[in-house]
Length: 235
Image (cartoon, rainbow, N blue to C red; front, side, top):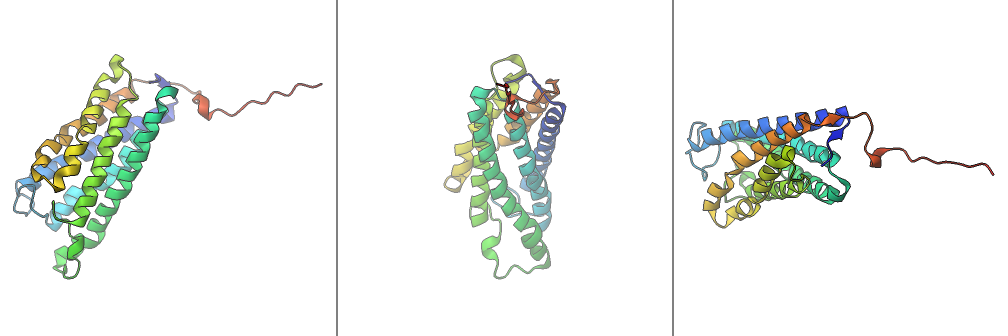
């Protein structure tokens, strides 16, 4: 991991990581309220959400996608050349995560939830977001499985130096949750293991924010962004 980047990249990394942490925290609070039945559902992880629950759960989740993608782009900027294979992989998996989950959440917020509120769900049952028993729920957990794998790749960017230790460990821990997230459709109880995401992911984002904050700003662009020099020698 490099220890200095240009000021704009430093700010982008810090604020995108903070935004991702805030979105994850807001989602965590809403999910706890949902499981308690405070948002109108029957409570527990297998209950379908009400329109209010969908709005409170999926709005921060929709914003989380682009925020996390920007985090991975920023991590790539501080990766050493030998580690950029991992940061490239993190960006690729984060992009797939953002597209999959963003599609699910946009459809739910703009099309499904308004019609649920009006009682007009006849004919659109296949698009309802039913935990463990719907097409869009399967797409959603695929997206979060890819996000976890993205954090796994990102963890390899950080060396064992003190300033990257917390970020590396939390990113790695979040990455190891991927199978527990992906296999929930078959074994529903795995959601209790996967729910560790509520700690590992926002924790990793806060740790990354501190990493970016501690970097030394530099006005020089990284080597791969510098314009090539051409020296012409007269004969």
